[in-house]
Structure formats: C-alpha cells, structure tokens
Length: 63
Image (cartoon, rainbow, N blue to C red; front, side):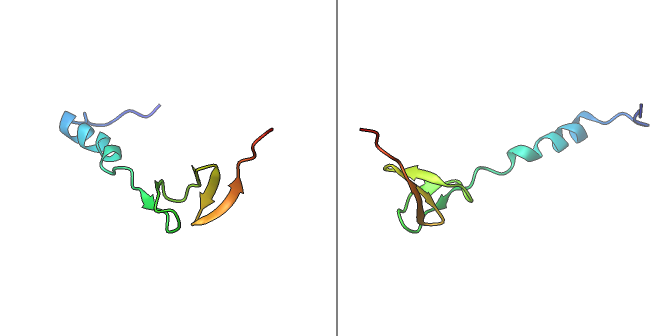
C-alpha cells in the first residue's frame, strides 16, 4: 500500500477539501414558461413536463 513521503499540513488538506462547495447550484430560466429549473433537466409545471422550452409529456388524469 502506498504511504505519503511527507505529512500533508492541515491548511493544504483543508484547501483541497473546500473546492466542492465553491460553486453554488445554477438555475436556468425556461424561455417558454419563465420558470427557474436546473440546467439540462426536465421539469414539471401544471401537469406538463418541459424540456428545452417544449412540452415533452402531459400527465394523464385517471377517471
């Protein structure tokens, strides 16, 4: 098993561990509905599934 040649300092270790928190979640705005959603994701709005500003699917109502 590999072993480190030198001890990694706390500052160096902690600097490496902070990077995943640096980027906050970005939101996109749908050009059709104006709704905010995660980029490159489909989202439901009023029983319709939207992707890239187009209706992909409508929710069926069982009667």
